Picture 1: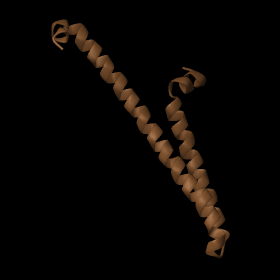
Picture 2 (picture 1 turned 30 degrees about the vertical axis):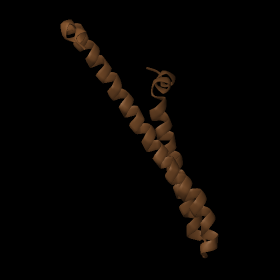
Picture 3 (picture 1 turned 90 degrees about the vertical axis):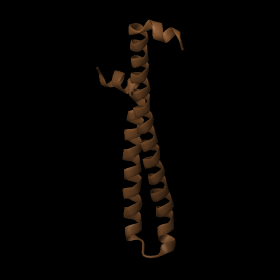
Picture 4 (picture 1 turned 180 degrees about the vertical axis):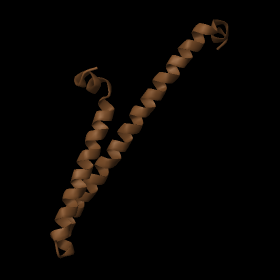
Length: 95
């Protein structure tokens, strides 16, 4: 499986990884900006841009990763349901 076909199939995991990396970069850049500022007024823009955006991107990455895991679980449950319907057709008719 090539990288582009994997990316097409696992787009949500790729987006989650990108969001994680972007969130960490935003947090590190915000921390670097705050570490040089002496006054709270100078620190607020870094806190807002680096901290809040970084936390948002980390949360978005977590939600996308959980969504990808749930999609895998749903696919597996669907396959089990189809296998069950094939092997026990008389039970599937009574539903």
